[in-house]
Length: 192
Length: 192
DNA sequence: GTCAATTTACTGACCGTCCGGTAAGTTTTT
DNA sequence: AAAAACTTACCGGACGGTCAGTAAATTGAC
View (spheres, rainbow over the protein chains, first blue to last red):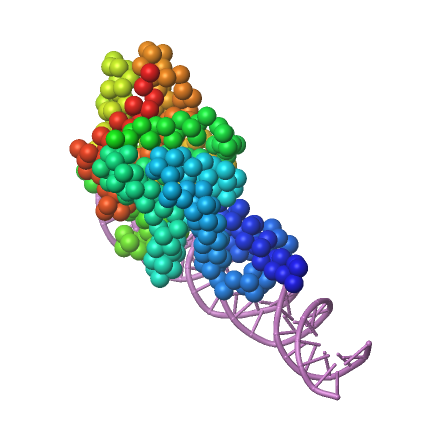
């Protein structure tokens, strides 16, 4: 039982790396299998098809980030503090993990419509919705202006987006002053 | 001469629409030709290969936006005004054109390395560089804090990024208060 | 504890389809 | 007539995906 599903985990990691680098449609199953030095059919033993592999990567990461956000931004503080912790939580993730957030929003159109709809709901439930909830809470506590929470969540996410690209100069380490700057810019903008 | 290159123009428009919708690697030459009701080979009469078609779309739009920015944000005003006009200029573009900015940053990794490098330079020269120049000017005029202009340009662009996706609710019309809000958030954040 | 039966975790060969791209011929414009 | 603007027919190869087979691990009857 100790080493069970070792290959499955390696497939998830390597495929995530490659999809982030060159996009879902830019990577073939053959390339993934060759990178792992296994047969292509081995991928299909662990995942029904290519789309299932992508979905496993995305939903797996969404689960991770949901847990982290629930732990780091519980609704027991003021909304400002919670937003600061949310941004910090995201940038505490290594760039290769963070980049999966970009992969998700980028590759949603690549999913077949059934999977697309259900994944879109999950993405909102486990990630975007958390941001919107904090913003809504801040408005009700009169910490923030009565803004459009959906749009505000997009804008906050958008500010971070450039730092979800795998590139050394965009790899902000925890504590980088730019993270602080981004948070301040946004919070000052929406503060009541 | 009147109708010269009529098909070429239609190819550029239809391919842009499809690439924006499903990505460069998600659209085949056959699909583009079928959408235009011409043969696939007709595309190859006007464009050397698929990559040349993508590059023509991207560089064509970069040329457009460069002209617009040079006209609307000349270096004869304060940096704040120029940035306001820059954001307005972008949102004066119809969503389907704006979305090409996203296409560019998204599909740069899909280009073969030679084209990738030269296009990356062009992208900087005609677009990102303009934003950085205004920011640099604002810093020198002591309008803005002495920030990292490259990162600040990314953040400004990032804030707009969610509105570069083709979706009705993200289609900000010129004059939408959200545009004003975005600009204010950013400018307040970097103002000296 | 042994050993046959079954399940797990793969491999190698192969499938039909679609891909980007081309060569040669045909129609249309000048 | 000749150049421009296509179409038709085709190519080799890569694509996602499947299938039969198998070595190794696990299980269960005795």
